[in-house]
Image 1 (cartoon, rainbow, N blue to C red):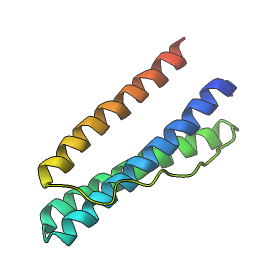
Image 2 (tube, one colour; image 1 turned 135 degrees about the vertical axis):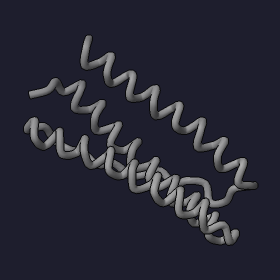
Image 3 (cartoon, rainbow, N blue to C red; image 1 turned 120 degrees about the vertical axis):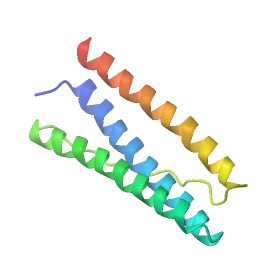
Image 4 (cartoon, helix red, strand yellow; image 1 turned 90 degrees about the horizontal axis):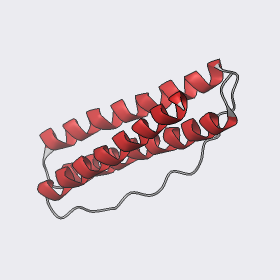
Length: 110
């Protein structure tokens, strides 16, 4: 069994992973609208990967007899200025998510 603090942190991370998936799918849609199918496909692959991360944490919480608490997923931006804007946003977003993972590790060790 895990602590309630870790349970809450993992639930927040599930939401962050699902938001990442939603964000990347939004980016894929923007690329498709701009007739950039290769970029769109790459972003869809990233969206699936992030969704998978969230599901792994979902499964882990269930295996630990903890409670999964899904929250609303924030709406991502609707449009992007350019492909460069998208990839700069992806880079920044990945840094934030990685920081959140490091925080989970610190909590687990602490």
